[in-house]
Length: 507
Image 1 (tube, helix red, strand yellow):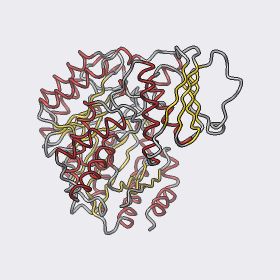
Image 2 (image 1 turned 60 degrees about the vertical axis):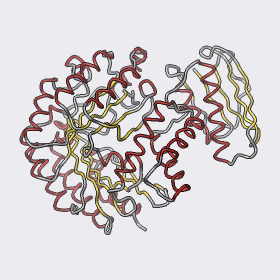
Image 3 (image 1 turned 30 degrees about the horizontal axis):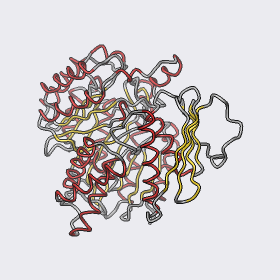
Image 4 (image 1 turned 180 degrees about the horizontal axis):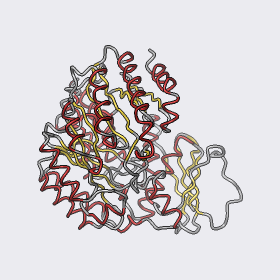
């Protein structure tokens, strides 16, 4: 067990996250909020310890005490340039910790010392800052600006050449796409459907088995109607750019229930300027021709049909109640019904798979030619059945044997072969290979909601159980309010859920 200590709690999360990235199989105790200023005198003889200590603004000390995991004890001390401002001193300290851990372990991380989920947001903000200083233009980035931003991110955050180039490519593309959207005077609507046919092994999203909750669906839909009606009042004067119905699995609703929901959306919400209307159909075993026809009846112009893998053995192991053949049939059926913007998701590093399995999946998907492809590096989430089973069985992390970088390279190449560009990216805790999730799409088929959500440039009004509404202010300030995850608690307390949003958008 590695114990972490620091005398400045604002560095506690970084210290935990970066140590976990280097020692991913080791149990790590984060800095204690209650006692982070104190280093106990009675540390055990065989206890591993990493301590970051700040004597003053110009001195930074790092101590490693070797026990059962850390191989050697070391002490380091760095002088901080007194001319640096507060933010620069902070980044210098983070860099020192990262550089030391690289040297100590012999490992370099592709994303350097970045621990947040939105690396492209940092790149985009830096590009805008540099270009505005140069010529007052906040959306056309010249080569010099891009080069300066890339150098800054590499030196400040130690981001690799490959990930820096990827981030800059995405940030530039996002900025161009966002020109057609409304940041300050617009918003997007997220509708959460927290029901699924079954729960996948790796999933930690809010979801409930539809067969157990079928009776509560009508009441749930009525609550969504109430929330949407209030959204129209609270967002009066703003333009609705995108709608995203996610979950769970929205198509776990029956065709009749889906019709009720989509009818309510089109009757209640102002759709005059709507750029994108996505339904995350997701599970092939939940999609029928009747549901596809219902969606085509309304202005749904983007759907997602996700196999995660094109290997039947893996599908069975992860709890997906469909076969590869069913996925192919549903995909072709959606094409026949006129859907010309279909996304598909895959996951790299699923248990039992190697890179050859990923290559097979990609080759099969090329035959279907989806319009966009979202590639996930498997993250083992604390609330998932997979994590629970691993903890109960004392199982080692099976992802250690998987070559994530090679698999991601194959996925990027396959996307390029299909005429797709990377357009959004995000990271999660405990991701396989310390990599990322990346969305690829053809021109004109980009998921606009995904960009708006990740870059946090527009308010997201979310309705439904387990959702989070986000208010984005023009000055960069962001405030959130969440809805309870339990479906029954949500329906029983719908007025409170609505009132939370009234308070969020009160002024």
